[in-house]
Length: 562
Image (cartoon, rainbow, N blue to C red; front, side, top):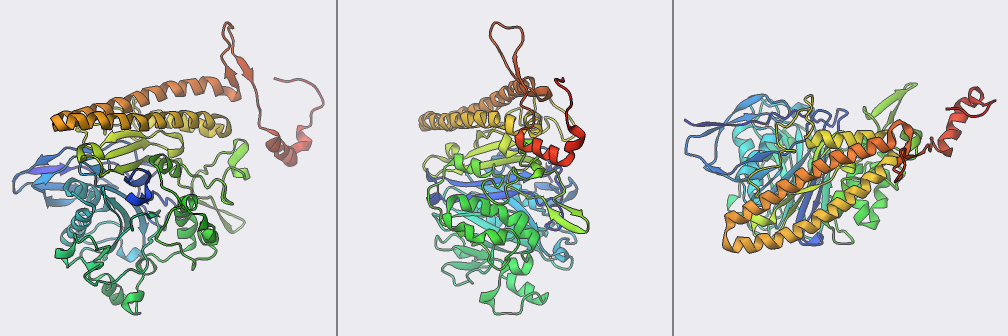
């Protein structure tokens, strides 16, 4: 018997709605809602211990009897073995060569369902095994469901974004606890022309019951791929809740979220607010949910998906991932916590107590502890070997640059590759450490340094979007002659572009450090030995706060000073 290993040895925290991490955000854009007809999803993997790197699994064919070792993505612990598929597809990050892409956010849900005796398949393993085996989003949903049925589900409640070049789905799952095997789940197709999102709070509420035309259970395999099917769910998702005494109404009133992950102040203020932050940028009617996301009106829940008022570009998707709740009453750049330089970040934990009262730090989409993030483009207008583009970045999305990786690529850039550094192992040419140097330096004087990052970010990403357009054209010409040559061409481009970005960003850090060190702003003066030096200080508003706090002690009675 042949054995291979699927080694998910990248440490991530356990992500429960009950803890203070509340990690990960996904945005979903359907084909008809995008400017170029792409299906797009985005994902930020937010964790204080996740090292950002680009995963890769090569395609292959395996003989019957080959077994695969499964290791839990969160912990690296061995969970068990499952049979390997006869054929597996090329996977780069969270997208495969067939343009299937999967993202996730963990919502946790009912704690009594968190553990399952003997379960093998954790959520990370489900994602990457499904990507290796699936040709469409529907097939990925089917594979995930079957794996949980057969081998058990070993994680907390999850929301998955699952997309291909034609469709986008949300699939929400939760295990059945210690005494049962598998999971209950619901998958909803996002209507074409609409957008959706999720961020660590279950979002599927009521759903259409099985009628054989638009909705089926997982038992109705023959109709799985009927184009009219827009809802698929595990046959026992309602009955299981009844046996637990969590639901007693009629089936049509059953709400997945209200039953398995009821909304709370934390779920609204820390999680749904990130959904709202994107929704409000594409639809002017979203202000009516402001009290909901503030945690003050939990009955006024947002819809699962909305109709945007304009077509969305890949550049806008990157912009959504960089949101700090700017322009809202939750904007973190204006209160005293932002410091003198308007920093939109708050160090964890998310809550703190003063004199017996609990207060919150806002949880925005863009956050300092992001390991990696991505935006995927699945495009039906070009062959699969060229169509899938995985825009990948490491570290905080607001301070990083997304670089395009074609998902047919048979290799990944050395600067992003798995094993080039770890969370406690430095590597000078690892993208994760290079980008963290820039972002963490910017946090110290955000209002001065970050605008320079934004300018470089915008310029480079616009350049890369233009380059992808040119590479597409040349690759399609090669594709008509030699598919293998076309794949090698897009692979070489992906690697070269990403590596050059990292080397450029290293130089950029050196420039920023020299310019802004010691509280100064230095400018090179041609022909002079020394630079021009400005000392902007803290600004009038912050100086007034200093005076109000300790002005009597700080009054000057002399002149000058260094």
